[in-house]
Amino acid sequence: NLYGSLKFLTADGGEARMDEFIGAAVRYGVPRIMVIPDSFTKGGDEAAEFAKILAGMKRMVAKAKALGITVTVEDFGGDPTNPCNRMVYLKRFLDEIPDIRLALDSGNLYYARRGEDIRELMRYAGNRIAHVHLKDQLESDHRTYAELGLGGVPNEEIVHYVAASGYDGWYTLENTAK
Image (cartoon, rainbow, N blue to C red; front, side, top):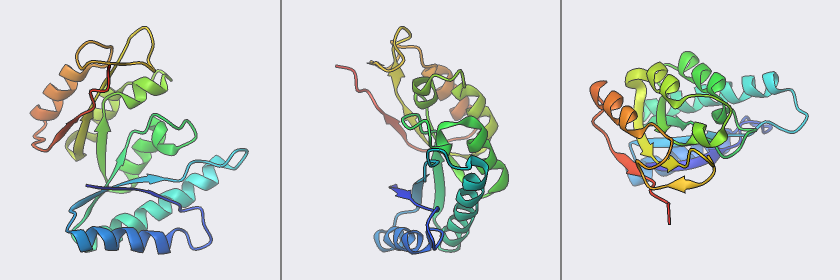
């Protein structure tokens, strides 16, 4: 995998950086890239900005697909101003870009703590899950990591569901507890 943050809210709509990022994937033979799009600007028009981000993601996915590269987005819990931090926008990416895939991170929506359930997003994405990250956080403090299986994130249920849906890819274990 190759990971990158792309700025679609630029004068060129992110085209130069997009071409550079896809070019790097081609050069290194990377079959899958994960894109984290712009965050919304403070005080900006969120709907208008999302429309630009969505248009950029559509172009990115089309360009990458033409070269045999899969584009993923991750449920991104760390930045509340990023569209990947909210299920409504992740679902729109999945709805409006048929070839985009989800990099499912079991703990990020739990970390964001807005009441959104990763299981709902997981089921929504269905067989479009292209990578899985597993981590755990304490039930008493969603921002404190726990050893896998000892926190409040439903990792066991996630693994069972994803495996039953036909996923046969990698699981990245983010076991960051001390």
